[in-house]
Length: 231
Image (cartoon, rainbow, N blue to C red; front, side):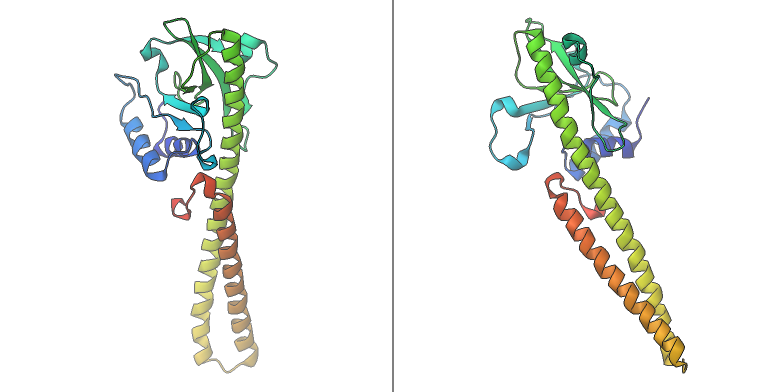
């Protein structure tokens, strides 16, 4: 089933792509249901905020892995006989990153995790292993690490979204309160004047607090490059 533009964009952002790159890629994916050639993304480090990383810490996103002639050797939990079938990758426990192993034509194995949304797509390591079980253990660790990272991104994303919505509501309340302030020019009742002034002060105080909460949420989500303009 073809994914919506928003769902593809959100999923790509969770993988670490910038907002511009994720939107461009999501639009390209939505324009075509089938691909003639597999898309192979550039290698990228697991955590770009840690500075230099070794080659063993780099991975590559590949769409339609089978088009490369690589055959699936099975999921990591099947190969190793694990009790779980992947790792939850979001705070709602909907997406699961499941370790997978592909067999290269030369007989070596490459570990990674299968895309839970798009069949036949996977994030794979840019290194290989001779032993299938060794690759399966690596695949399970890769799936676990990226699932943890994705959960953290998901929590930060929802935190920023809530902060933006709260600030938007607070700003609307301030605008309404400013409109009420105009009545002070013609209002002679001290009680009404006090009520209007107090309502404005409360609305303004709430707006300032929501701005501070949004700044805190953006600071917390800085490693994931989440911006308030996305919401």
